[in-house]
Amino acid sequence: MNYKEKPLLIYWELTRACDLACKHCRAKAVPWRHPQELTNEEGHALLEQLASFEKPLPHLVFTGGDPLKRSDLFDLIAYARDLGFTVSVTPSGTPLLTEEMILSLQQAGIWMMALSLDGSTPHSHDTIRGVPGSFDRTLQAARWAKATGLPLQVNTLVCDQTLDELPDIFTQLTDIGITQWALFFLIPVGRGAILKAVTPEESEDVMRWTYETAQHSPFRIRTTEAPHYRRFVLQQATSERKDGSRASDTRSARSGFGVRDGNGIMFISHTGAVYPSGFLPLAAGHVRRHNPVEIYRSAPLFCVLREPDGLKGKCGFCEYRQICGGSRARAYAATGDPMESDPLCPYEPSRQRVAIADQEVRDG
Image (cartoon, rainbow, N blue to C red; front, side, top):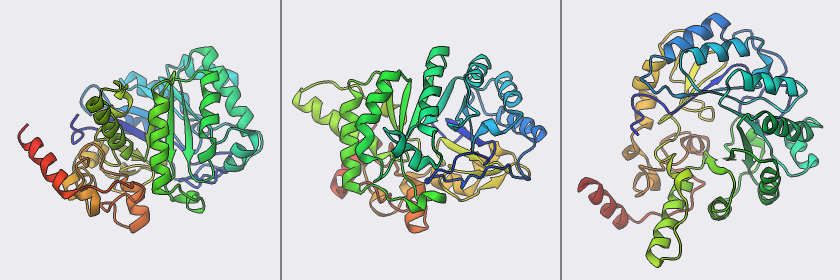
């Protein structure tokens, strides 16, 4: 898909208010709402503008902070759905997320709810989330979602602190019965700068484990801010075809080919600033002054990020740059330049392989 005209996903950070104090929070969320948040009227106008993207419309994710801290959440959900959007929501595991609230979300037509589980025990999860009881509330909310038939995605942070717990978290999620598991590889922004990322070698081990686990998982597994998983999947699938060992299911990874910060992704902050993603803190415009559709299509930052041939370092001559492109947010966090190489990927491309791959693309 060509993402020059419209994104695949639009994230709208309704508020930064949240009753958790997560160690990795990119938003540095606080318990109270910001006075400069987009108002309900501005929110309606924003949704109307976003609805001018060609059909089918991008998928809309109401995030935060905790979107449940906005009293007009259900009004915004209803208005977005009336305009033709599919809508997901990412509430926090707090006392606000009651059984009645989850039922209301399901009845409001939410396509999917996303929760975060960052540990396999109350101690490990609550240590990251900063509030005792979050682990139990999150698991209970997951069970309520399952009971109401509301599709559920679970997000899990991948960093040095959570690395060894991934298999146990997978087992817990299998018992609950979720729709999708998203492994979010730490970007050191916001409060996340205090945590330790996995090494490139550990990252590759996680890719291998994820690939093997996905073959028998009852739910989809995808990665966030780790697009080099797509490279790993292609390498494995190619190797399997050559030796005839098996035909693995690679659909989950392939569905994200080409998507990265600013290319298929747009993020709108609680105050209306527009970013290539929530983890790349370079604003390209503001919805109070510019049409967000035009920002996505024409802002210089978005245009640059959509050109993989402009990438630098080894990302710039990698044969997988079209389908991967690296995490632009991580490159920026590491170097101050969003076009530099993603330091988490250990793959060393060969210029000879790249030349052959480029020629194959030109030859069709």
